[in-house]
Length: 294
Image 1 (cartoon, rainbow, N blue to C red):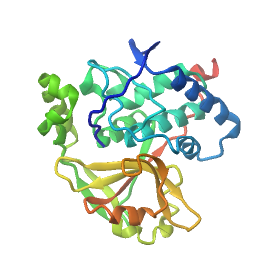
Image 2: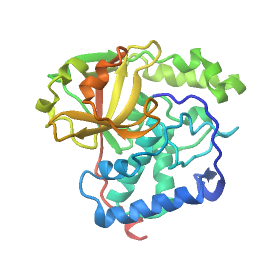
Image 3: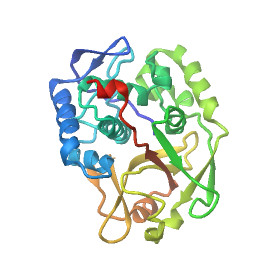
Image 4: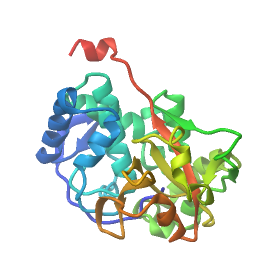
């Protein structure tokens, strides 16, 4: 999923993400610390859903990361798009599973998730395409993609990534700094040609039979046939009492974070360009010596 530009005001604060000041408000840091501390006693598995549900009703605002002339780690718990919801919840889940409760722990984890090799080195170092986000964070051992050669993973997507480099005018950083475009094109070429198995939306008509494969709190990456893109939208898997799979997401239609009342199958069928889903699971992170010592 790719973020377009919007204007959001965020205050710079004195915590650094790998040598660069992170941007957030006092409310953001307090929210993160409160959630991490409460999760140690209140959260029942899956923790990803515990955290995701705390953001229900938060306003949808596109491109909350595009607010600086130079790349900075931005934390915004007050406004979200589909990607920042995924990253915020994933970072919280990883920290909580390690027993980490400080804002600095969260900053370090979010930086690791959002950037190539966990290093902020300009706009192009951000993981803009979700396929590269999956690959990079799988290599780091933070997530894993659930797949297989048998149903329901009966379709194959061959990635063709070129949307950003062909539409630089749609991105503030690329419009203002054309020299970054070749770096984006290099990242696109790195994932172009990758073959990813996915569950076609037709298989989700009776989603209940795949409950042993798709778990509550899994990240659902909605595949697309739009030219130059591979993922159209993101959300979390939620099994409802109707026995069917639903999507908890930051919705541009509802203008807020919402647990969709319609089934995922119905949601996908309303969008002709949506072709199915890829499943990404947050890996359980055992406590490290670093976290134990805090």
